[in-house]
Amino acid sequence: MAASLFSKMHETEKQRAVRTLPKSLDVYVWTQRGLALKHQFTPEATREARAGLERALAIDPQYGPAWWVLGWINAMDVWMGLSGEWTFARMPEALAQIRRGIELDPSSSQAYQALSVALGGPSTRDQALAAVQRSVELAPGEAEAWLLQSLLLLSFRPPAEALASAERAMQMYPIPPAYFHGIYSRVL
Image (cartoon, rainbow, N blue to C red; front, side):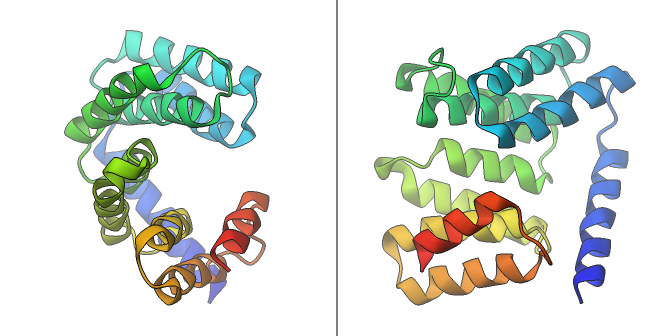
């Protein structure tokens, strides 16, 4: 079953790559590197990701994934204070970056995950939940979307709904990334 899920996830990635081609391979590499660095949660990784994504957008300002990854990095910096360079006053800028990425690539599940993270404040939780539910609709085999949905459901839905979403995410990985366990334990 896990192999089948991974196969479906990889097929989704291949289809997305064909749909949104960047102007150069460097743009693609910097965008993918930024996405990978997002999971390190350090000031250095945040700055490195931001710099690479800004280089990518200087070459190809129409490449949607670079926009939403940059917005995601910046939103996480706002929420977590990773670099100290982005405060809550700059969240509208991060949201604009993510929305620009969605405008250019509206079928990207991960872009909607980024939007849900940026909208994760108490006054915008309904919008955040709608964004992550759109992510799940676009890529039902993407474990991160299910896990993020579980966190948002936990905020204002019965705990059983949040737990079901978290368990679905955990089942998709034979060996889940370390941060999955932290989020899963919050839902439990």
